[in-house]
Image 1 (tube, rainbow, N blue to C red):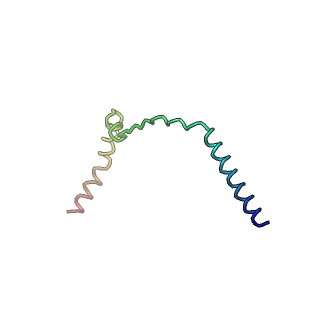
Image 2 (image 1 turned 30 degrees about the vertical axis):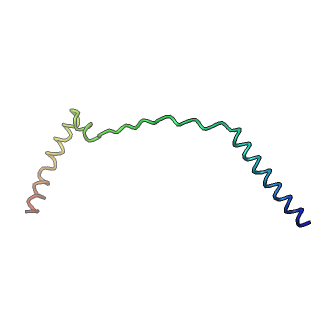
Image 3 (image 1 turned 180 degrees about the vertical axis):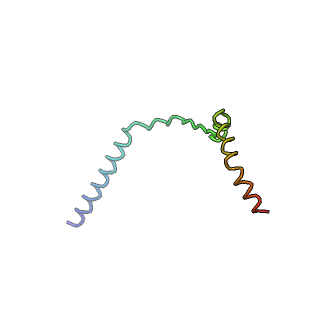
Length: 76
């Protein structure tokens, strides 16, 4: 009986592998992925080159100029 059980197990495993091989052979090949496009944007440059960006930069510069000079004087 023991030999019969081993033979049955081996036969079942072989059939299982055969089924897997047949199923994989029948499935269509994966289509190649379309090449993706990647864009890089320099946000600081894009905002800084507009009129609104230049105006905002000037406002920030005038607002924080006293603090910047104070820090520079502390570092001396």
